[in-house]
Length: 409
Ligand SMILES: Cc1cc2nc3c(=O)[nH]c(=O)nc-3n(C[C@H](O)[C@H](O)[C@H](O)COP(=O)(O)OP(=O)(O)OC[C@H]3O[C@@H](n4cnc5c(N)ncnc54)[C@H](O)[C@@H]3O)c2cc1C
Image (cartoon, rainbow, N blue to C red):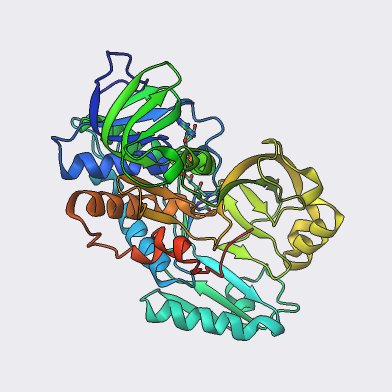
């Protein structure tokens, strides 16, 4: 087993693939690239190897099939199978069986709709069923029977994932992908990508990336460059003259304790805007932000759990009248401001500049499928397991949005 810390052996002058950012996206890309072709030289360059500010460390790490874009449902279907089998797929040689636990649990997501949004929920349900998702519509009476602790006041309909939805240990997935990628030959170094050289010059936004400049002063030549810099990927794209509309948007997660148990509690999405789910003996919750400017400091916005929000929580779950706030944290969504969907694949003009970014708050669950798709596209010329072409940069170049309606928070 390789050491968990970045390597400080001499750097090569040339690598096949240089990946900027070793969060869950960089790790997943490196895992699949080296799994599919162990002879490749893959270098992960990570500026904060402790990942303290990375989205992959600050995520709510939940997985759902209830998207409205078929390609997202396909990525989630792949993701849940990957998570269910991760102890085998990602186990390191010599590790004891069961040594890797991602803590996957599948209580479902429950979307609740007020009467004016019932038709929207029914439309989403039709898309999800057509894409093979195991989802059921529940009347207020069904909901009351299944979840006696839930108030159905003001609710016309619920949509519950019966399987394939829940939550897991996201940082453990990230570290396992990284460890397995390194065991397969990928190399991780602590450094910052601060410039790209293009064959046609950066100002044209065309040609090929020929080399990468690091803050340490090193220049590394590469055949392919992968932008996996998450919330910071816009700045990296700009180094190649590429406009990538991905911004760092802060989201706060509050940790609550509730004196009464909420049996079989799913991840609940309330019409008032909040989401809530169990996390061990606690509950975690969040909501759309009050202030949504780019790059806000990574400090919780306590105003988001004001009296109004408190009342909304207690209205839906009366037991929360007696809740206590334990703590809170904040992380960045890598928000694609164009259409709230990921960008996967090569740039049409800078043809060896690859992107795996912009997941807009649902990237942890999609990382395994997105990394595989990127590896297939890069190595074989097409993503055959999941057709991610709808998520390519070409749609941004054409100005054609692929809107995802179920973006949480
Ligand atoms: C509060 C919150 C809740 C979330 N909930 C969910 C959820 O329930 N389900 C879900 O699927 N997803 C969720 N997400 C989203 C998910 O966490 C992200 O989509 C995912 O972690 C993005 O991974 P990443 O590797 O792209 O980014 P990151 O993990 O941020 O990694 C990017 C890395 O790039 C590095 N980097 C940046 N610039 C450079 C440079 N110039 N040189 C070298 N390195 C660089 C950074 O240091 C960083 O480590 C949530 C996110 C947040 C913040």
